[in-house]
Image 1 (cartoon, rainbow, N blue to C red):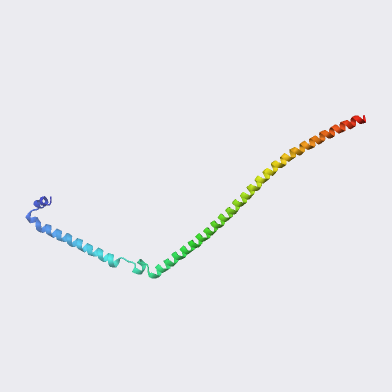
Image 2: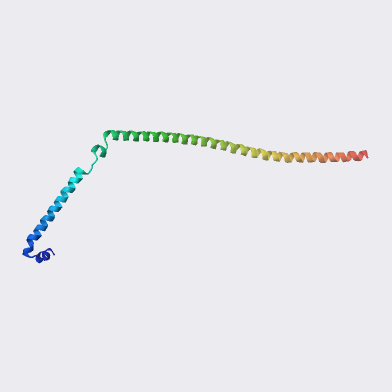
Length: 144
C-alpha cells in the first residue's frame, strides 16, 4: 500500500514534500519540548515533603494505630468479662431454676398426700357425723 502511494508521487513533488515533512517533524519536536518544559518547570509540583510521608508523620500514624488497637483490646477484654459474668449468672439462675423445680415437685407430692389425707378425714368426719346422727335419733326417740 505504501509503495502504491509512493508511486503516485512525481519526482518534481519530492522537494516540497520533504520540506513539509521536515517542518512537521520540527513542529512536533518543538511542541514536545514546550510541553516537557511546562510539565517540569512551570506547572506547580508539590515539594517532596508534601508528596511523601515523613518519618514524623509515619511515627504519628503508628502511634494513633497503636492507641486504637490498645483501646479495641481493652474493649474486647471488658466484653469478655461481661460475657463471663453473664455465663456465671446464667449458671446460677439455672441452679436456682433446678432448685425451684425440685421444690415444686416436692410440693406437688405433699399436696397429693394432703388431698388424700383430707379425703380420709372427710370420710372419718362423715362416719362420726352419721354415728352421732344415729345417737341423736335414738336419744330423741327415748325422750319422746
